[in-house]
Each structure stands twice: as C-alpha cells, then as structure tokens.
Image (cartoon, rainbow, N blue to C red; front, side):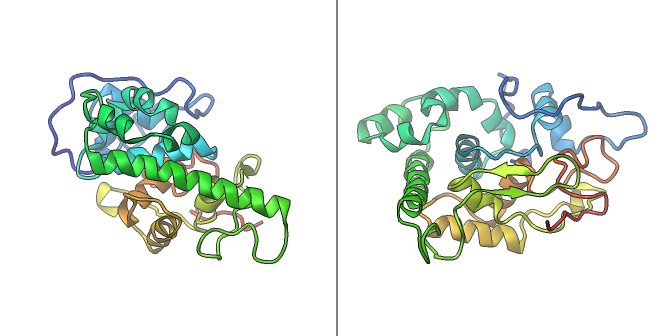
Length: 266
C-alpha cells in the first residue's frame, strides 16, 4: 500500500491506524542522522503514523491480507491517503473484512454500499471485494478437501502449482513467520529471496516479475482488481519486500531480510 502520486484532493478527515494493526515494539523514531521519511509518509500525521507503525510489518492472517487486497483495489487511480482516511468506514461497510460475511453480500447490499458516502462508491471495486471474498473461501475449501482426502495433486491452488498448506518462513531476525494455510500460504509463497536497496524515491520499484506472477496467480484463483503494481504495493505493505530507504529508521522492520537484502532459504 504505497501511495501513488498525490493527485487527489486533500482529505480533511484523518484517522489513526487500526489499534490492533501489527506493530513492532519500541519502533525507533527518525533521527537527525537517519534519512527523512519517503515523501508520501511525510504528507500528514495520518500518513506518518501508518508508515511508522504499520507499513512493512509482516501481515500473515487471512482477514488482514483480504482487507489489504481490497484496499489496494479501492486505491486504483486514487491516492493512498484517500483510502487510508476512509479505512474505518470501509471496515464498517464490509463487516470488518470478514470473508465469510462479505461473500454473502447480495445485490441489495451492493446497492446500499453504492449509497455510502463514507467509502469509495465504485461499483466495479465494490463487486471485486465481494468476488475476492468468495475466492478466499474457495481457497479455504481446497485446503479442507486436501485435509479430508490427502493425495497427489491435492492442496494446490487453481493453477495446480501453488501449495496452499501453511508453512514457516525463515527470517534473518526473529522467529520464523508462521504462515497459515489458504490465502496467506498462496501470497507468502511469492516472497522473493532478495529485496531492493533504494536510496531515493526514484529507486523504489513499482512492480517486479514476482509481483506480476503473484497478480497472475491471484487472478487465476478468482481474484479481481489486482495487477503487478497493486501486487507490489501489497508486498511492500505486508513486509514481503523492504523498500524503506537504506539507512532509514524503518529499514529491516520485517526482520525477513539481512542488511544485504537477502533472506535465509531455510
């Protein structure tokens, strides 16, 4: 969830990040010797709080990943500030981003959301959120079937190539990440072995071959409103890549990558 160029109107209402969002203990503040925050993170107190407390920390739970997939979709063509300022309204409108609840949304519920001025009223984006919830449940069902009838070829995604079984992801610092089955396993299986070393905004990628492959796989599993750029932004937001500037007080916050930008293979 890295913002695109700020071309939208300024959002008057700023909201703090979610109280139960993933956080790192004793997060250091920027110092005189540390590079300044990337420009988008310095735009407002809301953006600074998101950058300092949440962006780049690992997100591994199904609901958290589903929420971020949806918000990336709603951001398309807009600034991240536009989405972030409406985050709590989105959570209320989409039942806390509970995939089971959203998957049950019918046409009447979609029409009601189209009248909700507190969110972004784009019918394609709203229907994509419902479609994506159903795709999450389909992944769950594949896992359930594999557990009940294990055998060759079971427990894979719709492409037949990505295992949906949970696993432990080794980290450079800290205990391995426990990746649950289903959507988390699908997304985190694309965690690259290396991460960029940006020293300026111009050196931060907006997509990669891995994000393109992730987006393609998600689409083949029924997800909508996801492309290489939004997939890369998702990877940044949940800690799968670290694009904090080299020397930043937030560099390495995920614990996944070494100072040289590599992660342990086992």
